Image (cartoon, rainbow, N blue to C red; front, side, top):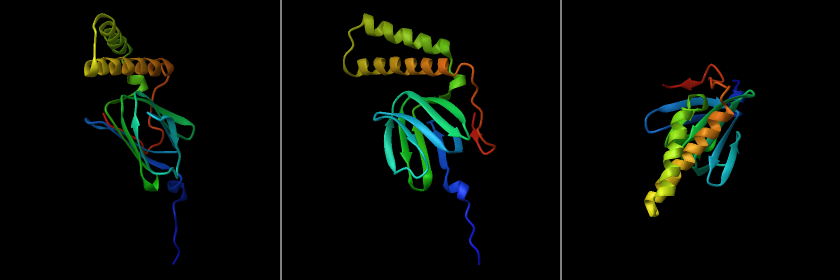
Length: 160
């Protein structure tokens, strides 16, 4: 009896990006770069299991020199055994879907609140986080304004 193995699958990451509303992406990847509280981390097949907090920033999913660029507003990334990665994001959107006008307006509102009001504790943290998300969304939108995210293999799933 002969055993056969799919070595290609062993060298890929099995990735899923989920928000409270829906599954954004389920895809096999060669690498994933995430913005975490420890800095940006790039995950490759065989990575040590890990759980990390995400901060607002760019999530980059790569396969065959093609990429999917997304904005995440925070959450967690869990790297499991067997090259499984799950990102539980507070919110996520494809770079090409970011509404720049809405992000500019949110940035301006947050900046105005920080200037005009004396904010403390939880209220200050909420407004500062809103400003950070807006700035992150704007950076990503500008960086990828000319690109459109598409599934990087026929296996990719974008759920609307």
